[in-house]
Amino acid sequence: MVEWTEQERSIISGIFANLDYNDIGPKALCRCLIVYPWTQRYFGSFGNLYNAEAIKTNPNIAAHGVTVLHGLDRAVKNMDNIKATYAELSELHSEKLHVDPDNFRLLADCLSIVIAAKMGAGFTPDTQAAWQKFLAVVVSALGRQYH
Image (cartoon, rainbow, N blue to C red; front, top):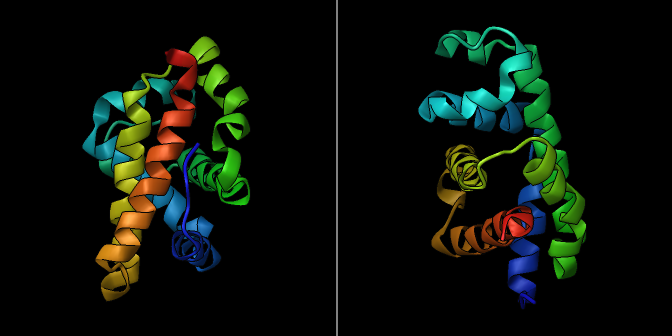
């Protein structure tokens, strides 16, 4: 079990309280699909993903980016039991969707970049440390079914 300080809880909750899901989610997923094009293989049913512009303007990608953030919102609300919170999602991504678990880390990195750009100087080293810890726990929980 992960131990969270009150400062870490406050930082993570504060980040989510100020997120525009409709802005950040699509930007993070688009960045992941553009920077790591092999991740596109899981989105074949989403239509045209042939270039960066097509990815950025794809409504299915935008909607899924928002869905991802709502999924992360579940972790924020259940910080003391993230593994159990994501047990079904881990199984879905492993057994049905066959997603490479490393892709969770790639998306987490892209999300960090987008949030850091949005927060600017507010994305302090302490903020980043708490955020990275949170995402590491989420990525581990999503990859749990693979182990």
